[in-house]
Amino acid sequence: MDLQDKLALLPTDPGVYLMLNEAGEVIYVGKAVNLRNRVRSYFQKSSTQPIKVQALVEHIADLEYIVTDSEMEALILENNLIKKHSPRYNVRLKDDKTYPYIKVTVQETFPRVLMVRKRLPDGARYFGPYTDVTVVKKTLAFLRTLFPVRSCNKAIEEGAQERPCLNYHIGRCLAPCAGLVSKEEYGTMISEVLLFLEGRIDRLIPQLTKEMHQASERLEYEKAARFRNQIRGLQSLAEKQKIVAEHAEDQDYVGYARHGELVCAQVFFVRSGKLIGREHFLLECSADEEEGEILRGFLQQYYEEASYIPREIFTPVAVDQAAVMEDWLGNLRGSRVYLRRPQRGAKKHLLDLVIKNAQIVLDETRSRGSFKQRALERALQDLQELVQLPEPPNRIEAFDISNLQGSNVVASLVVWENGDFKSSDYRRFRIRGVEGAPNDYAAMREAVGRRFRRGLQEQSGESLEQKFAAFPDLVLIDGGKGQLGVALEVRQELDLIIPFLSLAEKREEIYLEGQSQPVVWPLDSPGLLLLRRIRDEAHRFALTYHRNLRGKATRGSVLDAIPGVGPKRKKELIRHFGTIKKIRAATLDELSEVTGISAKLAAEIYQHLQQS
Image: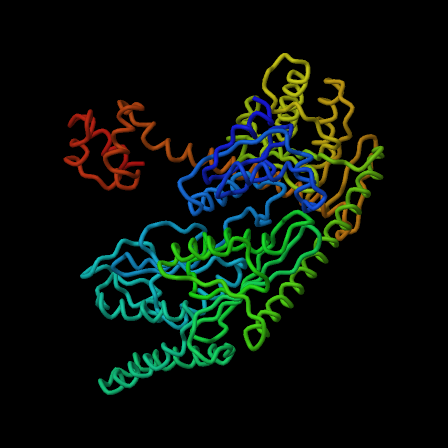
């Protein structure tokens, strides 16, 4: 069915529509109260159409749609599809990473406070998301100086009688594991932690002052001193919080700055009338995107993940489809939410400050991006001149070898392409022809040979796979002249025309084909910095693989060496006890309880494990 037929058959129901280009890629996702009217409006020939719509329509080759029961449901589905497809013409968060949260495990008997990357429906309290991991870590460190919250991951219940760890003795934990604090007293401290994380320090300080006096009256001077230190720390923090509202209200102020297709959105958090913090997020959008649509796109993506939504959200311009957005936000909050646009006064002044800060961050981001791009261009120019390429290398592949005294020899292949690492093209090789003694030369020969022979087979059609079909513009070998020599021998055997070089780690010397003396660049030269970065990534990838193999060998060796314990009985032992450590600690009677383990075999296992 062609595009015109689909347009003719569009329903009048609410729903979500997806625009696709000729390659079948989703380039835009939208929602509509009436799918027929909304989608057909894109194809009306009119010079009054926004520039973005005109550019979008030129690339539409097909469309899909999903009918929903309501506009609210369509909005939720639209947001999920934008995150899934990252369409070219939608407003979308630039970073695809997961932002950190601070999690308080209030569902546990003795809660913990930790940093996590995902918000789960597990009954815990979450704060965030935050954009700066360093700030989160500093906040947690400061919090733990004020509140002795446990940091272990033990499942502790009231009445536990374990031995307290060092954190208790240095005043960083109340030792619930040793039964030295009641559930109620610990819970009171967690309530104070929650007030701290909510930014409600004014409510927390009087509470702590009261507890300090009570402790002093009971002659519990150490506890009173702890409360005193908490109060001093919080007072210092409170002095940095700016009063911005006459009334004790919770509000968010959202503004943004843009340059072309890059947008920086800034959020100021006002809690109980005080400005307690801010966060910024980078977005990508069409260069012709309208202001209201930018704000709507950001609000959708941010507040879906936000741990808290205030009653009022202030924006510099009217948000597209504001009524639907208010209903959706209210549904997330559990009570009414208002989107407001202040025209004058203190709120307008604060919103102007938000926009000013967004512009500063945007300018800094663009400046850093320009610097990185210039450094990259200089690095590629250095490499182009070094190996005499007709143009700067676009794809660089690097090999590294890892082994421990000749055992579990592995090789890594990492790929750098278009200015960044391409992890989907990383490959690892378990070297088969080298065992018993270290031989990096033979290992390198095998790894390079296997990579390019597979690639030639795929290019010729002998293999239908396409794991190695793309060839690099430059190959980097980790090592010195010897490693480069064996790699060049493989290249000659396969009749390849690809430049190879090696980087010796000790003095960062670059070895080239046909040159007996290495090239030595300044340590801060862009070309060398890029080679080192790629070499270090290859080293990391190889070392990780080697550690995994070594760990598997170590884990399997204890049980595998016992006569009569095959894969099936080994599996039953692990299933029954859980770990090798618990199997070692088991008695003869406990070993005999395992399915398939006779009394005689249990005795053999026990004796072997005690001796090993």
